[in-house]
Length: 522
Image (cartoon, rainbow, N blue to C red; front, side, top):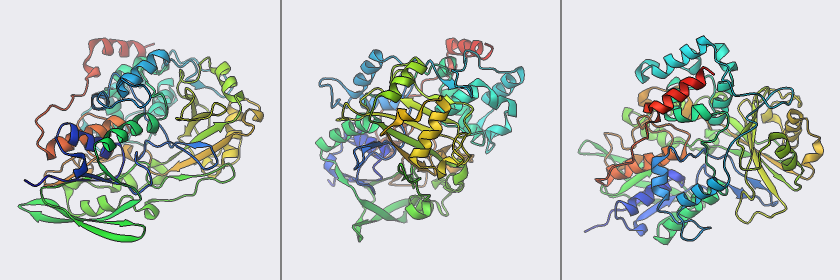
């Protein structure tokens, strides 16, 4: 009997977890699974790397919480830790957070460089009424509307909005449906939004802590990884009324190759990427502006979706960079002065705080100090922190440029201005800015049909696994979403008769509802 083969296009967490589910729950041999990745390393958006000059860069990190993310923890309870023998990755993360308890004491900083009082959400009666109306509206009624279609201008000056917006990276023009889903999925975080006590951190950056252990597990099971490989075409045929992949064309070092795909084989495509066309700057240069025309990162989905309504519609997500981009920074410090001053200022030891947001920053800038070291084998002489800004197209408060025009040196000057720190705190530091034109593209207003199901109704052997598929009630911009999509696709394609962990309905908890109401009226 012929063994089923599987081909995953894109090496992000969606493909990696799909491979794990195929082996763990589908009984497939690892050597029957191939993962194609255009970049030199696997991991997709969960990246983190040491640069040639010895400094570090990571595009971002996804929020984790042990009160949610049922599929993520269900996977990682079976993946051994690389650092702590005898522990799973899940157990390792839980133990780390018990030792380093998160509780932010400096969530918002005002224009006077004072830590803002965020004990009250600063809601008006009108704010509460509008928020309830949005929360209770059906997704059919919300449709393609924006958040601003449901909430008045005054709402966006509330403490709640500054904290919720920067925790999850929402913009006022984003989808009302996605905002509503977040309000429901994370309703238990609402009563503690000012402390971020529900957020859990990995020991190291998420590439080292999540991707590397999963890669080791898959490699030990002989999964085939083809890096520096760009899949350029997916050939399909209509077989018995179903779209069936019959061949893949890919390029390695400029040479084109084609492989035939049997109708019983499986192809999993990561359709679209929130970190597509990312670019890095330096201390002396801003990041170059590149787009999907340069990266070709959306072409496969665009081709497959053409004329096939149930394969989705990429256009709402990749057509407006000004509405979907932001810029992050990774700063490598060679002295302890900045960390020392931030610890004194915030009252938090590194790794116990969370985002510190400068609410009156024109860029709406936030930073977070991680527990150190943040990278495996990071020298003790270095300390690394990360930050981002939602309004990188606006002129700074202390630097007369937009953030996207600034190099790392200028961004550090802007940051010092918001803290009233002397610029010497960053002596010999290196700031690497990263521009991501599609980083919040998943939040763009969209119709229900714009995101395909993980396995479209008209597909025989092709699945979509990404932040751009439709999963009822779950929220994009999370590691959980990619893993849930992967598990859903694999179980359907392989006819696996096992239950996918259901979403925990915190919004149905009487305790959570009471605490949320009390918080809203505080």
